[in-house]
Image (cartoon, rainbow, N blue to C red):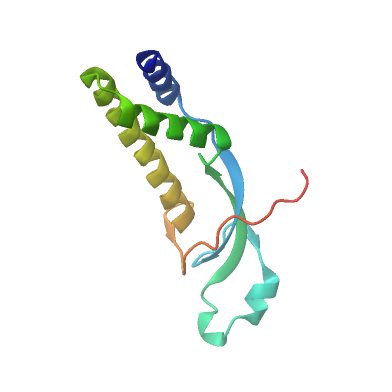
Length: 128
């Protein structure tokens, strides 16, 4: 059963995980997205080079992906078959690459622009 799960998960990861857009509030060196004028007007004169913006970032942080990651961790820890363990390790490292790509997209603006500070995190989304 573990082998079947790992093969199916390998196929899923090779095709690509499901990503979702999440709204993020950031302070960036270059404007990108929607400018937050309230915060822009309140910032001190020495920080006028930074722009408070709100934009959406495509992230793999979805309930389905978190559940698959948890199941992968359980299989990786509980398997006694060397081939299953090796495949689980490979999938786990692929998962880490997805997370690193998501982090890098949140700490820099599109086009490689640098941020003035860290991301404040996803804000609550209104009814779509």
